[in-house]
Length: 206
View 1 (spheres, rainbow, N blue to C red):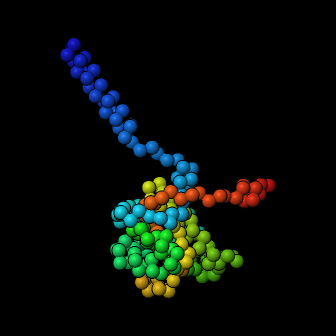
View 2: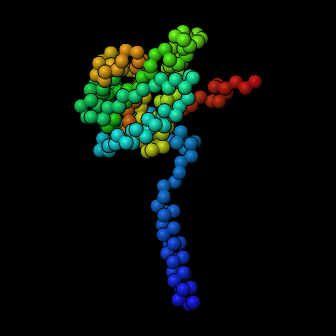
View 3: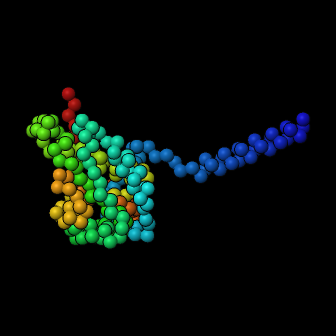
């Protein structure tokens, strides 16, 4: 009996010891507010770090969960990971954006399929028209960049781009509207948080 009790105590001690170690090594889970607060538009990337196709696919899967008009899911992503293709995209986004994304290993072109969101039987459902496709694309991109931040990555959404050249480079169909180019990588420096408007300039309660 004494031997069994001793073995039991030893086993419990080992469990406690390894259990404490696991807790100490576990990364803290970020709250949604912490993820939002740490997300910045990053313009200085660590060129020594890479991102895998599987990691990008995980971000896209989250972006696909974004809501859209009648669940049309109009957003599509064209992901460049090959260094030559990445460099080619960076040549098509303006000199400033090219400098800002110099160390980013992944470049993504975000599009939406035209005449889906906001349309019914081929006609615009209201005065917004194609604006709903852009709106849904923005929702998907928001999900994407927040998931990227949760995963430890950083992003920059850019609107300055040569859409015709991008369409030719990536074989993007004519029925898709090219919206934004998104860089993906790891920040080299922590950006300063820009000031936000006071709440009373943004909301009206009734």
